[in-house]
Length: 141
Image 1 (cartoon, rainbow, N blue to C red):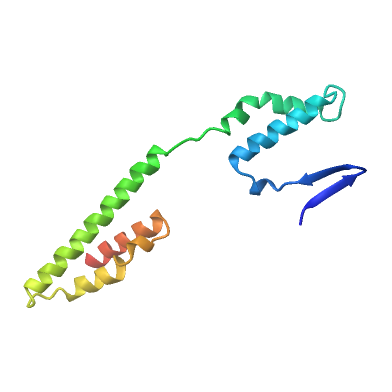
Image 2: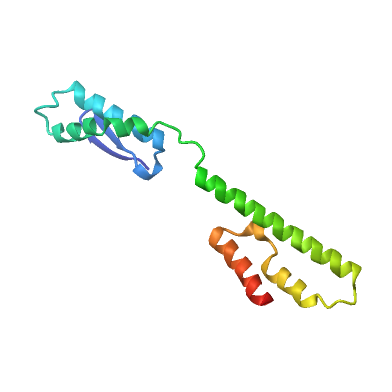
């Protein structure tokens, strides 16, 4: 459903801001400035809006830029992947140790691994992942 206002032959379609992409917001602001600039923006009721948009012109142009990869998130991603690899290697070493020495009682450690360190890829966020790992260390101690 479009939220429209009809005034004679003019039609304004209101676009919800939450549905606009960042680059589309820049286009929308520039189109608004162009429409107001075509009319007498000094005497119209949109003069204050036009002045504010012109003052923010530099920031509107920045909206078009692609920022690329955030370096901090990339560092965190590398650390998380290294943590997961270390945990996987630990689980493999424990499995090999339990197969080589069946007389060792590694069942409690295996249960702790199955409870806390299984399905680490399904962790929704970093907090959930760190809670699983710290829960494992709490059980071990």
